[in-house]
Every structure is written in structure tokens, then in C-alpha cells.
Length: 82
Image (cartoon, rainbow, N blue to C red):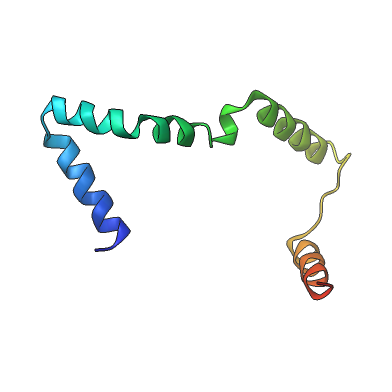
């Protein structure tokens, strides 16, 4: 069974399951759920502030940025050096 099929079956089950079962499943997975919620960088005020600063620098032309081609070539050169 594919991961997508498993996710769909679990989702469908949770939609109709008895609340006691849903709570039991949640308790089993609560630590993992809490950890995964911390993976969202946009929830981190320092990350958001840094992204806003960089966007402001790009808009004001303080940082001219690089084209996709420049980035791609730079990565390729670094990969060749390894």
C-alpha cells in the first residue's frame, strides 16, 4: 500500500472514529505531532524577521541578488570540486 493510500485511509477513519479511539491515537502520537509542528520555519519570529530584512534589501536594491542561472552554475562548480 502506498503512503498516500495509507494517509487517506487513516484520514477517513479519523473522520468517523469514536472520540475515545481518536484521543487514544492522539496520545500515542502526541510527541511526534508536537515535534512536527515545530518544523515550520514561518512560526519562528527570528526567521520571519530575517526573511523580511532580505526582501527589503532586494526591493531597495541593496542586494541585487543572483539569477537562477548564476546559482545553478555555482552549485554545479561546487559539486565538481568534491
